[in-house]
Image 1 (spheres, helix red, strand yellow):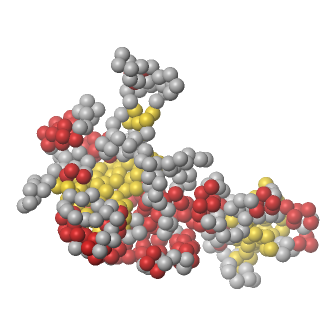
Image 2 (spheres, helix red, strand yellow):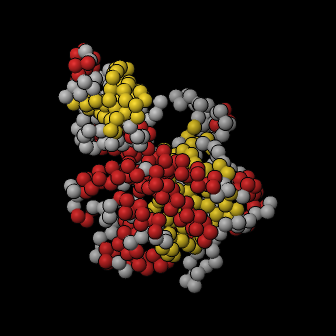
Image 3 (tube, one colour):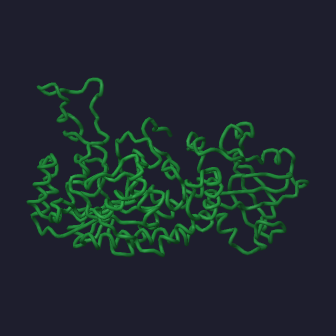
Length: 482
């Protein structure tokens, strides 16, 4: 059985076909708009009401599931090239119109907040159908890119005993009785009696394990769920999200930046080429949404222009030190418009600073590199001190308009002694990451990688303004519904 997406691309045919889907509308007892989720567009089925029982016609309601049989003919109306001239209609599963009115399936515009409250139904709306089809296409493009470029996927563990970021913001995993856990002689929870016989958590990153596989397979990538127990109730943060993390042996930071830029351009172009109808719909939706916003908050260019802009322009590469000088001398900083003023070298950049650099100063995607060592993770490759005695690491962040940071990575510290010293200084327990450190004893080579938050990529490509609207069931502080 063909999907509606395929049928709408077909030529009129005298061969009888059956289409299954959900009713979007039923007008004048004659025109049934059917959608099966394969496209933003509905297929119109035309019936002759006198050929059908009144009882059946009354069952053809919005949201009901139907099977319609007929011939595909050239459409007599505007808005579609073909339509189904129906000879048989079967209601597979009904939908009470009064119940439908209470939900987001009713044919009217609903706020995104309302849609989140009915996340089990929102994929059947035009907006979320489009977003999730684009998400699926981007997911495929991720695997396609890495396969075409000789990478191997590494399935890194979701349950781990280490903290890749050293941030301590992790979800604990335990099978112990929370009301009566076993205690040791000091009165502390005795994790020796737990399932893994040690404290365990949900992973914040597959990077450390992926590094070990890059040292054997050369080029690997992970693409899986990651978790952060951050109490961040913002439009850009989730407690559960998906991360893309390539790791490449013998790549330095410059090669890492080349890889990241090439990868992002590829997947964005794939979406443009394969999700044209959905992106066009989302662009029009964004234009409507912008009309209610102040001019300063509106999108600077239409969605498709923004996506094409990514492919046609090189990402500007700027050192952290140069970025700090730009920010320190910027009008918002001098006029104290930044919530977090930039006064000195070493400041940790916030979203407002990143977006200023991308949207106001350079007006293109930006890759910042060589960050202060004290604000970055322990595994990043340490540079020689600069002329001012500052210590930096070979880190990079990729900044996008409307998003801020979309990806972050680094050249990894391959020197055993330097890494051991950094772990000691930062309080990273050697007994927890002995295997990661030991890897540096056996042919340790220059290697690099980055992590890209998949939901932020989907946000950028779809134009959605909240990360909760680009994942099926968002997990945020106080919300684990559905």
